[in-house]
Amino acid sequence: MMTIIKIGGLVLWLSPLVYLINPQWMIWSKIGLPEWVRWFGVGVGFVCTVLIYWLFSSIGISITPTSATRKHHSLITSGPYRWVRHPLYTVGSTMFIAFGVIADNWFIAVLGILAFVAMVIRTPKEEANLIEKFGDEYRDYMKRTGRFLPKLG
Image (cartoon, rainbow, N blue to C red; front, side, top):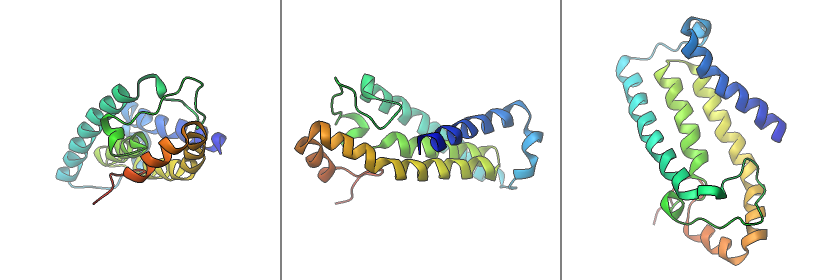
């Protein structure tokens, strides 16, 4: 699964770069969105940028590139992690979808959706590792927070 995520991540990151270098190279995946929708994507992208800064500031050195936990890993429950266990997956995927909307490009937007699906598939393993490391503390955290969005009620 990690190989698929790594290859997909490479394509995900290269697609906007290719678009930025020369939008004509990706004309085959143009949607034809109205200008106001594209500007809405700019707004969503701006909000995502602020949220990404907030969540990285909150998690600090406890972030890992894999689902494994580090020896000195601590459970972060502040910042956006107060409400959502995996905000980076939600916000990061939304950022790429927003870029697809801004670029008027269905391929980039679909890659953002597929990235989120890959994270949904990966999350149970990551949460099992966190339960193994933090036990009841993480189970209690799971009860009061949403996995990808805040819990309602």
